[in-house]
Amino acid sequence: MILNAGTLVTMNDEREVRKEVHVVVENGEVVEVADGYESGEETVDARDEVVIPGLVNCHTHMYALPLRGAPLSASPESFYEALVDIWWEVDEAFTERDARLSALGSCAEMLAGGVTTFCDNYSGPNTLPGALDAVAEGVAATPIRGMITFETTARNSEAEALDGIEENRRFVREAEDEYDRVSGHYCLHTLFTNSEDVVEETVDHALADDRPVQIHLEEGLVDVHESIKEYGERPVPALDEMGFFDADVIAAHCVHSTEREIGILADNDVKVAHNPYSNVNNAVGIADVETMADHDLTIGIGDDGWDPDMFETMRSAAGIHKLKDNDPSGFDNAKALEWATIGSAAVLGMADRVGSIEPGKRADFVTLDLGPNPVRPGSAPYYVVSAASRADVTRTVVGGETVYTPEDGVRGVDEADMAAVGEASADLWERL
Image (cartoon, rainbow, N blue to C red):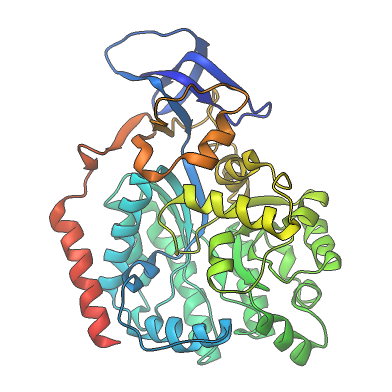
């Protein structure tokens, strides 16, 4: 495959933006990026478009898809009430059918919006065991790359938490090899919904299987308050004493992390999944990514299952950080694109494979039609963050294969599949 790009935003180490170039792909991998246009049997013509790396959503919940539009009566006045009155009710109501179809629908949406790699957390205790098989089947019905996990929680019982750990262990060791682009890892819902024994058990398995552990960390103040009540200190030092950071940790949110805690995260090379739109929507606050950056923490960006348009998630990041400092120049918009590509890839431990367009990387691209205005190299990343949307995606390419166009839709997904997704959502609403 040869891709001719009018403007190529590489996101390589130099953050190069190149004009009028072609990308040569062999066996799904970029082998050359060179000046000028070329022709060949398999040529993608993006000479009038902007080409960016496939977007990487480093924290999502695909099982949130059925909640859109649901006629819920709950009116939570705090983040904890939202968990108890909405999300934990949904968790209990989920079936394997829901797990499979919500994954399929979410993956189709992500590909249509330029996301080529994601990291998901699924929670449905009544679908154990076998929950991750259902999720993986939904993912594998599409050509996306995905990391999946079951969200371990002891909120009902420690036995249920151990079942969650076992589900992740079983998938990683026994089922993952059945899928080309799906892998498993470990996850703790939060510290306040688990015990020290569960934390240690999770770390032991993650280390044995050489997999990361994902955790929702200090998303809401309930996490902080319960940690002080139970352990006499905030979540980060409490987890540090438990040996949690012996594992490779992906910490989602970190909204209420103090500078001291951020220092501990940095000392342990913890990766941060920033979820700006979700944090605003849940009214929990704004993560101190500026201090995180000062400590050289690796930062990526996720939608937390809320927004199917990662361009809007990037724009949310730019907006809230400017607003926080009351400074229209207080945030570099290009940083949001970095988080959504090479940054998120680094969070997931995949920066050697995805997140940028350069030789040796997987050929994952998104082509964008940004309209009639000229695109200049110095402003291209800013243009993408400030003006692009999923509606501007003209094609999504995974491993050198075009897997989405507006005309043909997502490869492998048809109208009947999406109708089934909608029917499952309606059935779920009835059970709720």
